[in-house]
Structures are given as structure tokens and as C-alpha cells.
Image (cartoon, rainbow, N blue to C red; front, side):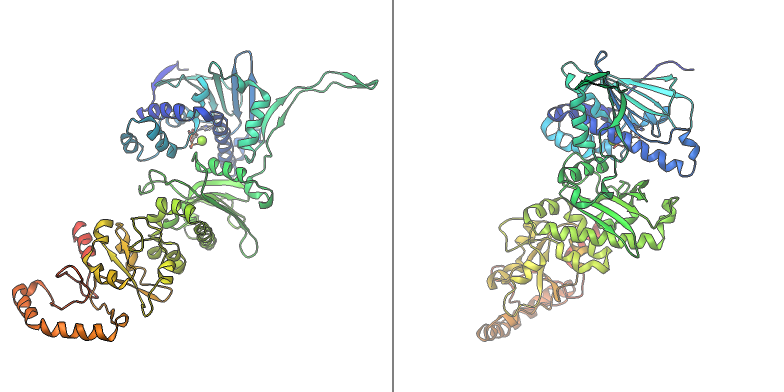
Length: 565
Ligand code: ADP
Ligand code: MG
């Protein structure tokens, strides 16, 4: 048997601990939600492994969480009989932050506490929140199916110790030695009310000890003494299995925090039970903030998958197309086998139909969100860039996705992307048949493009596209509601339908008058250009470069050059 060893926390853990304690001090009770959430995850993981190896239950198959309060020692303990951890798992889960890209992310912190606190929210709160109320945390854990248990202990200040111990039962005890002044967490009433507030939806019982009552007399009758017992203080039914009409908003919000490890409220959600040829329940959420690693290819995303209420896996990415990878939620299917693996999921008919269902639920949810422009703007600013991948990825839903897109426009004073294609179409001029856009490197460049002059003069709106993905998007979105999208920088632009007879005549005359000037330009520029034309598009600038209708745009050329083509 080994001895006690001392280990150092990963540098990022120290930073996280520090920021978290400061920014969560006014909402410290959430540590309990986090610890109960972990206990419930541990139960889920055990139940899943036990599907193929029921001996893991030993003779203790009733998974639960117990919270005990010890006034004399000033401790609060959260115990579970879930999966437990090996020593190696303790080291990697309770000493480091495992997310890819963490180091890069932390290197960007400014040192300004209030700013950094907001950023840190993207990490989820988790186990380390115990240190908000505790000046020492002891973790005693034994992994299911193993004999050796381990004790982890830390004051949250840079290091922790590890020692082998004996532990009778499988699972994990988290013992919080409460800080001076945190005695309220020794009150049964207080703790019970926190559980009800945050953890009612946890699907296993969260139990607290209920003292028995001594023998007493009432109206001359003897009432026998009762023994104390453990009693569940939560509802202990998986939230998504309950009836929609019986679930409150705060319950939906707390459940979101449990599954997403996010600490802010979701923007919106959609809860659906489907019965018939397909049988499943989905509960999908739109977060309020993008995770720091949304653009990291290795970042995990996807839904939490259950089969007949049994947890199967986290981050099941098969049920959402990539352009909706920011959606969080739970999918509970009755059509998949309990022994389903990631490999099997890849290509079953069931997966395809679930993916179709979840995609269409999500698009509907976004449609609904869009009815509240203020809320939708929050969504768009965070996730619009991702949604723009949609038309290229999801042909079947192209029109619906197109309806959800928002753009900057000459109709606005600033760069806000809030104009929908439907808005644009509703403002089209008499005789206008196409949707006009310009693509440039930046909003400023788009806004000041010389191509816009004639449009401005005629009072025609032009969409101003300057995000990296816009050129790609436009290629996959040739039209919207039967109106072609057309670049103002390409040839073949015919605005003559919008002109009156007199203008047309004047233009004709100008063209004739400039014939000889054009010849001189052509000779001078030679092979540099395809053609030189008199343009009626410009009002203030003397000349501009235009690409042919079917040629690559200048933006696309730059993009290709930048990737070495
Ligand atoms: P998260 O829950 O977001 O993964 P936490 O900081 O809450 O992050 O927990 C970190 C990890 O520690 C968990 O992912 C899990 O692997 C492990 N862990 C924490 N609490 C328990 C527990 N009660 N039983 C088993 N493993 C746990
Ligand atoms: Mg957690």
C-alpha cells in the first residue's frame, strides 16, 4: 500500500478556481447542484456499463445520492453509489481541465477579473465549485468492479494529496469542510430547499436523513416511536419523461444547466414526444452563448443519448447536422437497441430518421425564436456564422434555413446583421426581380463599394456580405422564394426595367459618345481585361472592375489565393 503523495494542479485549474470563487460568490449554493449533477452522471455511467456486465452492481442496484450534514464537524457530504473513479481518473478529472483548446483559451484572459469571469462561464462550473463554500474538500472514491479506493484532498490552493484507503462500498463521497460563515449549509431545511430548486429533475433519488420521532401521546392515545430513515427530497423522474404541461420554466432551465455544463440560462427550448412509426422524446436547447471551442474541429458536441431512459452516451453527434452543432439536449429513443455503439449509430435507418426529426424540430424552434427579433439577434450574433454553413450542408432544408439568415444591408445605418431575405423581398422595388448583394472583405469595404452607387441612386436595397463564409453560402443559395440572388459586382446586370424611357435614351447617347474613348482603353489595357464598357452603374466613381457573370468573383479569387490555389 502506497503513502500519501502531493500533486500540483494544472495551471489552468488554479486560474479557474480563483475566478470562479470570485464570480460565483453571490450564488454559492450552486455548488450543490454541481455535485449532485456529477453524482447523477456517475449513476448514469454505471447503469450503462452494467448493461453488458451486471456484476458491476454487486448487490447494490438501487442507484442514489445521499446528502449528510454533520454539525459537530461542520461538514456536508454528497455520496453516491455510481461508477466511482480509479486513481488515474481522479488525477485527470480532479486535477486538470480536459477540454481541448483550454490552454489557448486561458492564455487569452486579460487579467481583468470582471471580464474574465464572464469568459470563464463557458467552462461550466463543475466539481471545483465546492471550493466556493469549503476550505478543504475530501473525495473518497472506489471504482465499480475494483477493490482499491483512493482519497483525494485539497484546500484548493495549488495542490492536492492522494492516498490509498479502504472503502466498503463502490462510488464516491465528496466531503466539504465548510468555510467559516457557511453554516447555513448545515441546515437540513436550507439544503433541502436548494435540492428542490436545482435538482428536482435528477432522475435518481437524492436522499436526506429524516430523524424519527419519539413515543408520544396525543388526545390520550399513544403514538409509537418512529425510526429515522433516508427520504428522497426530489421528484426523481427524468424530466423529459414528464408531461410538458407539468414542467415549469425554471425546471427546464435547471435541466439545461445539468446537461450542458453551462452556467447561464438557455435562450430557448423545444420538448417533443413522438409516437408512431418512430418513438422518441427530444428536449433540445439553444444556448445563449457560443462555447469557446465552437470552431475547434476536435471539440465535442451533440446530444445526450438515452435508450428507453437508460443513459447511453454523451456527445452523440449523429443526431444533428454540423451547422446545428451548438444545440444541446437529450434524445431518448425506444427504437435503438440498448447495446447501441457509436459505430452502429453511424448507419442505421433509425439514426437517419432521428436526425431528420431533430433537425426539423430545431429549425422550427429557431423559426419561433425569430418572431422575437431582440432574442433572435442574441442568437444570430453568437451562432449565425455556423448557421450559414446550412444551405451547403442540408439541401432538403435549404429554403427554411435561408429564411433564418440575417444580413447587413444598405437599408441599415450600421453593420448589424438583422435583415432577413423575406424583409428584403418585401421591400423590393416595382419591377425589381432579383435580390442584390455585394461581397467584400469587411463591412466598411462592402458599404463603400463603387458598385453600389447606382443602387443607391435608384433606392434599391443591397445586402452587404463580409463574413468569411459568405461567398461559400451564396454559392449554395442561388435563390430565395423564386428570386435569384445576384452579385452587384458581376456582369449582365440589367437594371433597365427600373429605368424610364428618357433615361434609356440618354444612356444610349452616352454610349455612342464614348465609343472612341473605350477603344483607347482597350488598346492600353490589352490582355489585362476582357472588355471595356460604358457603365450606367456608377454615379460618383469614374470607373470600376467587374467580373463576368460566370467568372469567379474577386472575393473568391482572393479566397482561393489565400489557400494557395
Ligand atoms: P463535468 O461534470 O462537466 O465533466 P466536473 O468538474 O463537474 O465537470 O467533473 C469533472 C469530472 O470528474 C467528471 O467528468 C467525472 O469524470 C469526474 N467526477 C466528478 N464527480 C464524480 C462522481 N461523483 N463520481 C464519478 N466521477 C466524478
Ligand atoms: Mg459536473
